[in-house]
Length: 349
Ligand code: SF4
View 1 (cartoon, rainbow, N blue to C red):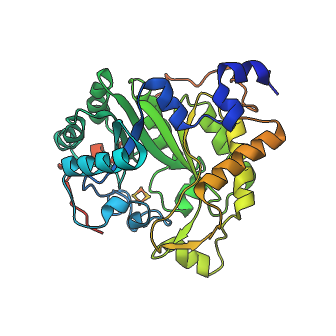
View 2: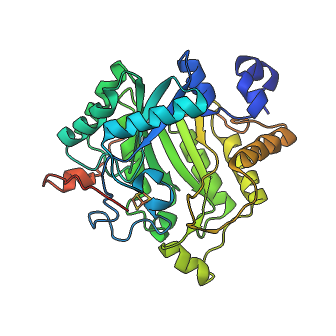
């Protein structure tokens, strides 16, 4: 265990929460209240339209985690205005991060992407942008576009990884492998863009050791953010069929709390935690049905770490040989593989 008391003095949030919450990160960056506005720009996903795969990830029903997909499709400007009004009224928000959340938000040509991103950034109260995407769907030209926003804005890219294990990625039909993720990280780290990685705990066939190997691998990549959530089974998914056939189990809440604490202990304390619990919207959820709220589960993780005398990074050791950034990769992204101009689809689910 490291010298915790001096670390807690430097990073008081570690004493209070035992991890580095994203809201603390935002407070360090800005003197005003900042909230993320989730946006649906009308993109689709290469793992649904056949370019990377068909059917999508086995757990994915995008409707279940993107409230913006429902209802009439608004322009980005309209969504920003609606989000601003909502967070100002409900939470006293002052400034905003435009969060391109639904589907794969780099799955278009550069000019289409520029138009979408800049429609959001044109709002005077939008001080940042966060772009959710797949690691096999990012070209150097797109990175260069996104990097250009770092001069005046806070900029994040969020890569869905879920697991470093190819056997798991294959089982959940991710349509990309771990090498594609390493390639995306390698190229993104040449820019000023902050990187957040999405991981799911409790994926089919994964042992605790598998999940901790994912934590250890991410710890050494030099990313700035992490989003964790538990596997859940939603209606109308391939995962639901496996679940009803008894091929997949989900975690109980206490098991998840322990795994999340184990994971956090292994990643450096300067990686900000953007999410610790997933949730499904509406009536999509099949399993697990937890009685506890998201806030209660997050608090449970804090309590578990405190009970152990642990905190984010308490088991992390800086590698003797840092990750080699000169590694060359030969991964072609989906956008490069498909020279025809990607089409901007309007999706109404
Ligand atoms: S990459 Fe994302 S949007 Fe595409 S199928 Fe998987 S979870 Fe769904």
